[in-house]
Image 1 (cartoon, helix red, strand yellow):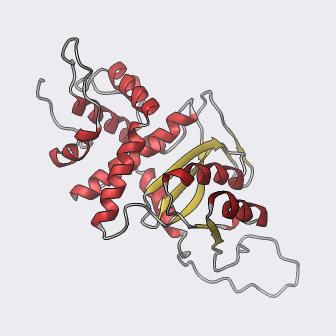
Image 2: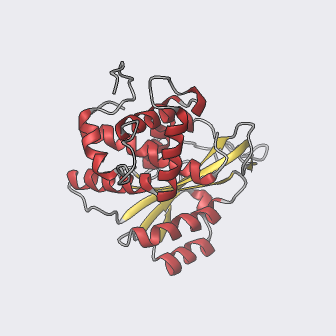
Amino acid sequence: MVERRRYPTDLSDAEWELIAPLISGPKPGGRPPAHERREIVNGLAYWIRAGCAWRLLPHDLPPWQTVYHYWRCWRIEGRWEQILARLRERDRVGGGRDPTPGAGVVDSQSVRATDRGGLHGYDGGKKVPGIKRHLLVDTGGTVLVACVSPANVDDREAAMVVLSRARDLFTRLRRVWADQGYRGQQFCDWAEDAVGVDVQIVSRRDGGFRHTWAPVGAPPRQVPAFAVVPCRWVIERTFAWLGKYRRLSKDYEYLTATAENAIYLAMSMILLHRLTGAPL
């Protein structure tokens, strides 16, 4: 391999050692691969962080067709979900916690879509045309399950999909915190009966009335200053972490499966940096 100048997104030796056993090697037989697996992962790391189109990948990285080919194959295999699971367990055990979580936080984020095809809708509450990212994270903010839907899908409907996916993956999961958008006895009863999860709604200190209408002559409301909402702040921080990866700043993907896989890739990069002490 010809030596090239290092990009800030390139994996360090310590980071590559963590995921090298989890990356599938070349198939037996045939000619030797033209590009090392590490360089392909470096191409994916550049793509997710820089937010560029596939055809705009730098020329000194593997050809964009090669990087995209492995991105697609690994998405179909669920490779980045597997890598994230291993890194998440390693991070939790290193922090003195159980490898699998017993509690989590669920929330959604409305993201504006570009002028491309694929599923998208309109979030009337936030006035955002595009998609919603529905995440379930553990109490440390690490992504457990990601689901992408059109922006007009109700949060509770998407949360049913998220919790159903989590049911078989995280058998210790017993409690989930959520905001007021998930209120409703029907949803909470479903979560308890179908998944065995106790959904607890955490309200803001202002009761959600900061920007709502009040009758003329009504006494002024005593709205407290900004305060961190218990439990819920964890997932807001996760959205901020993911926002550092420019491919996730908007929705550029045609397939929801690709958009979900991009979240798993970005979270894997975050955990790699955390486990090796590298800056985000």
